[in-house]
Image 1 (cartoon, one colour):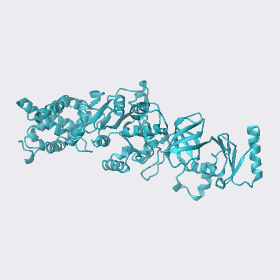
Image 2 (cartoon, rainbow, N blue to C red):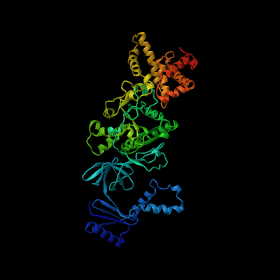
Image 3 (cartoon, rainbow, N blue to C red):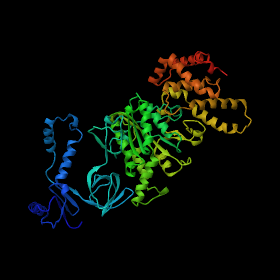
Image 4 (cartoon, one colour):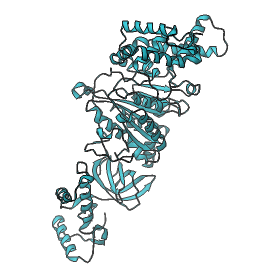
Length: 584
């Protein structure tokens, strides 16, 4: 790579320069013809660049390494270091600093466009390796060539002709219980203004569990959303896609699911990809208000972050979740959203001049998401029995679920919750289209109590929506059809649920049992929400033990079912209602 260069603090120190030449002559067999460059910033020592390799024995590098060792995790906190202990701490840390020159390959930035960097040299670099640039910038290797590499900028600023060298490390993130309640970026750096002290790290990329390491998905994950838990049940270890147009409540379903895990022993990881900082801040405040941040980690790559940061964000969040899973814990992870993740990867790939395919996405975009979502699993008991339940979010355009990214992710996941703009705009929230939503795990991951009362729910909703189309045109209908429409109207009202409001298993069971036994038939459609709230309050006060038993056991024995029916009769008779809830 041209004539060898020797960087020294002062050209006047000819004896030192001669000694350096003699040292390299013994190493290389002949003295190199150095071009001497003076740079006072290295303080002392030297930096030699020979055939693309850098030999760094400068005082400035040694001081940086010493500072890194002193501030490394596991060291004494700075506020605990007394003056008389500073010397001992420095001696202990300095013992770990090598006196030999640091040797690394050397490259040079040739071009920079939209955070994609072309670098000459670095022939020994690895794919996915982190790169250090002059000035402290960090990059990620994404393309290997014979004469150089292509990289994406993660953080910092880079100029052409900047020096760059590989770190020998892949991208990694700090993990562990210390992250609970925190907001971090994909490199593990805090975004909430507080420090993080953890000694454990995991690479952001990791292989998915094998078939033999997995166990069947048969334990329910309660979302607290009546529509989902009754008709689209989710199991721990499942991958359930949340899909729909913009502003249809996709994130609300995910946030409600996180809120419902409070005091249930389930950890949560929320990954924001390409979201506005204000949006993520609002979600964090909602979780804090509900007390859910104590068992939640937020990994955020904002819309202002580089495409590379948005690209590694879901993998980093998954690494955080895997640490809990392999410790035997159950985890819910939300990827919000993978559409923006695919766009970030497409922009990097096009700038790296990779061939584009359908909708300009690179051919490996399917592998991009499959290697991420396959890491969600329910581990066997031999590995601790932990699980990761993945809730990826994908945004559609004009309800087109046949687009490239939606079809890719649908084929990878175990079902989807499809949210429809028409339902959302009509006031049906959550706006779940039951006909296009499915859970491929199904009732194998549903409590017996819910299974007993929700058997005909999907059929009832589907029949109502089909018949409502004819009824709105004033078609003549018989009395049976009119009764079915009236019942369906009340069912749809019961399925309405405010954002961030969740129902327990016992409350959901009571609502559906009351509906199937005609408790709501005597009330007008506009009163259903108020009647439902009064009924639940009546049960909480008068049948508290019964409700706790259902929540704890997940079953509805005949004696408890009979007790609930008796309570319903008392409620309808006026003991649980009031003047506003009179039968019409």
